[in-house]
Length: 250
Length: 256
Ligand code: SF4
Ligand code: SF4
Ligand code: FES
Ligand code: FES
Image (cartoon, rainbow over all chains, first blue to last red; front, side):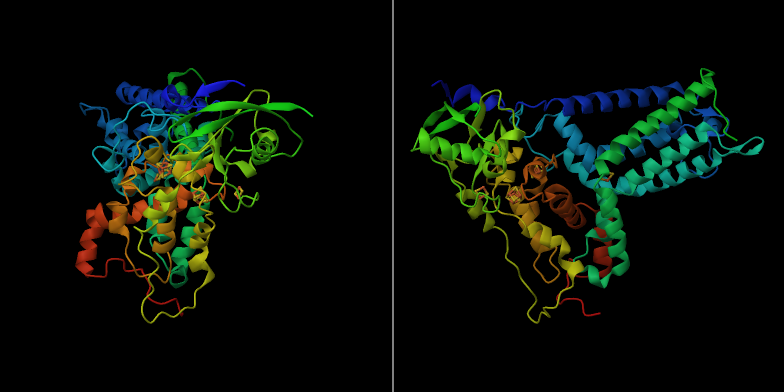
């Protein structure tokens, strides 16, 4: 009969035998690479357009303003818009979970010990600011609306209406972004979650139920919409650089 | 019959050790069966708490291979039995003996929550859509696995400033109740310590009743706390219309 002491080192290690580290590793890699890519795209200021296609990084949410009219700006026009999706995602309940786990190890995975002892959670600066998430949601709705406008414009080529692979990519991207934005927990609360008596508010109840249905997959929409933004930009960039040719379906 | 080694914690508050027991196992066995077999054949003084063997009494919580779980609901075919299987008591609560922990802190915490408070002349008719949400929370069997896994309690031992996921669920079931008129947002923000929760969802991962603790209880409560304390625009409108703190709290059930 072998024995092992219970005190001492035991509290600093986990007995989990599964590969709990895969999830935080994926988060660090995907968020880290996406962050670096987004910054590079914003600094780069080139190849954000091809024909009727416009990279989502350069979609300025102001009527009549196009990124290419803003060449005179000392900073990249991408920075005019990037802070909104950045703030939206940084304060999003899904991403909060992801980065608290992967970057802060608070905790890295369930029942796995942490590295630091001091912990104040979302009670103190800076993370108390995450309570402002709904304001970023308000700002994100017009951003998504402008992305819809861009996606529709992607079907209008110089010779009129048409469908290119890029048009479909831009449409798919804005659909995924809409799912992400409208499955938001703050929106779910504002639309109906704040009520206690649904039977008195039938319309808001129906709306809340619909949001709840897509909110169940909020983490999925968060990840997939981030990948689709990246993919849309890569596609338009490669077309603009002449590396690949956009196929016109009709 | 294959034999499997179980490494079971034996000890009390003063310390203890993991002891190996090799047990012949059969198809369909759960971890609690193994513990009972060890009690019957090798260690009659092995302490464990159990009652229903059906995942409903919430008393057999432990950590199997480092994962908080109900022993009676953990089938051996869901874990790797080719290596020794570790069974420890819940880490967050003081050990009484072997696999039995003292969970009375939870009952003390419960007292911080103001009980169900209907309006004096309540009309007790309720509609299903008004109670669907709170019915999910009523499924809780008080196994305290969520309290055990929550890193705020487990790692930071924040047992004075934080009530833990189980009691956030209970508060949600009262705050969202269509007939309750009490306000618990101040408790949530202050002694309830909802801000300690960083929505990392371990509570949801372990809940044997599959209550969507974070999505359906904690995040909605956090949003209500935001309404009250962190949203200046909402506060402005509240003052402008000088309405009650929570305009939607209904004193009577819907009668339309
Ligand atoms: S989501 Fe919050 S309450 Fe649940 S385990 Fe994590 S920190 Fe604890
Ligand atoms: S919420 Fe779930 S995990 Fe927590 S005590 Fe209740 S049943 Fe157990
Ligand atoms: S919770 Fe994720 S976007 Fe609002
Ligand atoms: S014995 Fe009742 S839940 Fe396991």
